[in-house]
Length: 360
Image 1 (cartoon, helix red, strand yellow):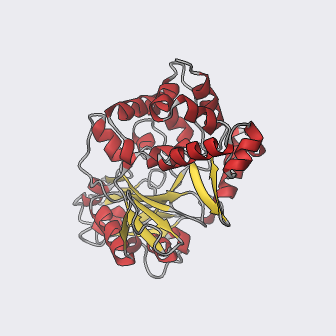
Image 2 (cartoon, one colour):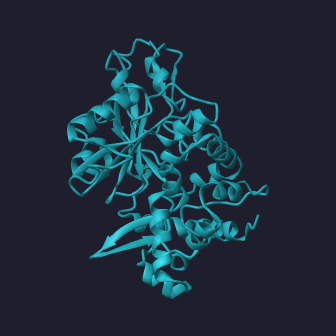
């Protein structure tokens, strides 16, 4: 096989702030070869984060604009590249592998793809996820934050839902992938939510089941009841999805458990605290904490390890004695959240020593 197109695409994806690190065994190349044809990989390697029309792509790399337009449309339909609109024209751009290509492969995921991704994740991807600013940040269950505590809309899952104009739900690609790889977990599958500022954005979609606002909130409550942690992109404005994650399957949270990387997801600006007078030592809170942040102290009451606590609030809403609550961390313990995804890219590129201009 001619691996050169896949090598160029892999290098291009790794030049993005998100990262797509190489492996000695070339696992990432086999994964790309499962998803992209040779021709698709060669074309994707020429794209930029800034979206172009097919005519602009053709002018830059050479080739027949109509043939390039057809191939770009095909690739966008397979969720291998990004597609958008500028005025009356359709434009296309490079899609990061995570978050991007991988999450959009639910319709095409099979056992071989699942196995290859798992090999790649263990070999190289997990440490890249934990680079600051992290890919995801934790959002607390809304009912876990006391009314008197100041909370910004981008810090609240209900605030994020309220800021959207359209809501949908899709199967969690992480739990689907792990099940196909032979390691299923018992958490619900259909709880991952795309959101949009365009009313009716998911109506008629072949892959996204449209929801009402109330249905979206009910889906998030179902996820929290199942012990799943809400996470979103690590920026404030322009959020387009809400994940409900577990440490047994989620690519982000697995890095905490499997790779010992507690900073794989940015913590929420809150941490759990215990009312010792109310706590009966039942350990229900510990059973819901996926990060080992809650233990039973010598006095028979729960204790919180703030370094391990991600501020998800699951322990709070499931405590039968209402002995737990979330409190805002000290200001010097809260890392500022980038305002936009572009701001996140700038910070992340600087951390990785990349030139962002090379891919824009």
